[in-house]
Length: 400
Image (cartoon, rainbow, N blue to C red):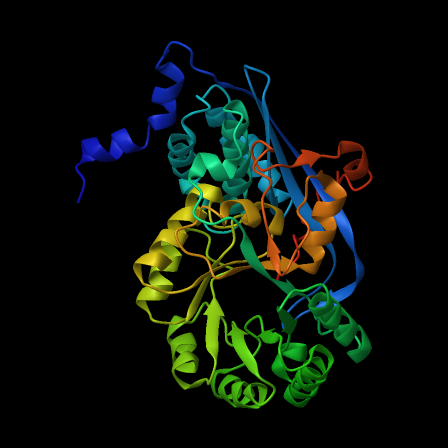
């Protein structure tokens, strides 16, 4: 256990960075946050939630040298309030080089409001922006700055919402397969798991549409109860489903482990990990075959890479949840990576908001190492029409 002195020292790295006065240092001059609300192209639903818009909390930082970095989270506008009230003050003035030190200070700064949830998404957006800024200052791709382990990342097409008609479901999933994406995911658990026969029928229709060769994944978003989830897993396996995400709520790790022990396919979860320590707990509980984490929730790039390291230490596959424009870059530096989620909503939004978004080729995304940072350029005028100024607590959408 660390001493009191060690604990205090660890909580003040950002302050030390501000006061260090090193020759040639470069500090964060400004931090601005804005909120955008983007309507979906069709009403969407999964097993436990319905939505018609997705909210983006967007952060821009600028250094004294004039370099800029961007980051974002799919979160509530409340995250912007946390950023302005609690986090901005510890970021502005800090050394651009000290991203991990700033991360520690931000975590300490939200102690009294609760780190998981809104605060974690706020920290995530800032941390992504700071890493983008640091790489831009060094005129390097973020992949190169972090240390490249792979040239590209495999993706899976993700959507297949329970609100879609059978024809919409089939067209979307088959469209990804025709693009060369060899794995696709659909939603199940219709109406909180009260229509299991509908889910089985839709899975069969999906398999018919994508053919025998493509992998088929399903995601219940915690809609089922334990024995029902096991029964559904057996039915889904008859259609060749190889990956079952959150069959029961990941709030109950012992139930998730029980399903994993009895289901005939891989069980995945982790999108609601708001820090890498939750990933550790999930893996200690032996609750999953495939561990997920989301950079826009899991305390940013710093936290997400730690989650990847933990999965690597457990010798389990690691998968990135949503936000493909960021995960495509940092996934190439992760210690382990099975694939990233090419989520329909986020692909739409990232194409609207950014130049430099990667396009799939042969079922993969390959970063352009000639572009600094994340390789993204914010299209401010295109995003402006979605600017959200209402104080109402609009949600960020549930994600994939």
